[in-house]
Length: 317
Ligand SMILES: NC(=O)c1ccc[n+]([C@@H]2O[C@H](COP(=O)([O-])OP(=O)(O)OC[C@H]3O[C@@H](n4cnc5c(N)ncnc54)[C@H](O)[C@@H]3O)[C@@H](O)[C@H]2O)c1
Image 1 (cartoon, protein in one colour):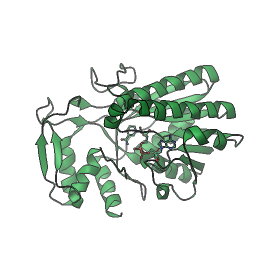
Image 2 (tube, helix red, strand yellow):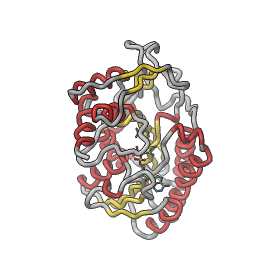
Image 3 (cartoon, helix red, strand yellow):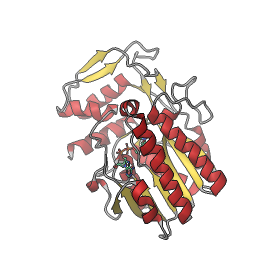
Image 4 (tube, protein in one colour):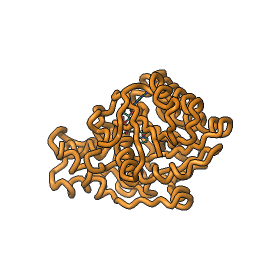
């Protein structure tokens, strides 16, 4: 298939582009390099530099694309709270420009990077796709609005859409890995301590109702997540919008993650306990039963593999 990957110079988009190329697809990456890196675009993919709003229509126009995989977004929760307008403009506004360009050029399918943040604080765990969506920040709210827009474009314009709601993505795939300038994710931040780039890890709260008192999160290896995109692409059905959670179905605590990082790196990683952060739920774990039963996807790599691949990637740079 001829595929447009928006945000393909970023962490997840670059891994998925590599997997798509390996599967024999033609890949064009559209990225404004606002948080991505030109050298992350895998060999064999063509990079078009630009925003979705300014460039998507030109790239898609009359070019016979079969589908879009849409990763491009701003995704810092804290920043979204400080600048909600930016998130509505960049996430919803630019996605709308992309969808309009798809409609005009009759591109039939889209796979979209949605997020666990669309659910907000869960009432029960593991989280099902049918659970209430009550995002607690503009990042999650803007992603939920894109899910809703996709459902409308499916219903009214016949596009086939799949939203994949990622939980905590980690690990690396060959030369593609996590290189966020502002890093908010636990595993790379713990590994930075092992590398000597940070002094210690902050553990926010150890009095949660969990086995070791620290928060539980659902980690998924970026290569497993990537495989799900190939399945989702095949599952896009004209006129339908489908939503699937993407997580391992298991929770790992902050302490467990730090211990695995110590084991993998063989280094001492000092940890300091700080008070709870407001709005951090004790447990955020996905039910991935729907994607397992409907698309036949299953996670294959555990936390050890995520940390070990991320560590190899970080040390190679
Ligand atoms: N990393 C995670 O754990 C996680 C979890 C849930 C959801 N997601 C979602 O997955 C997607 C990818 O995340 P990531 O961690 O790879 O982020 P990233 O910042 O590494 O990648 C995003 C890419 O999109 C590009 N981009 C941003 N806005 C653009 C625009 N308007 N036009 C063109 N290019 C633009 C950036 O330059 C970057 O290369 C995002 O949509 C994010 O919200 C990520």
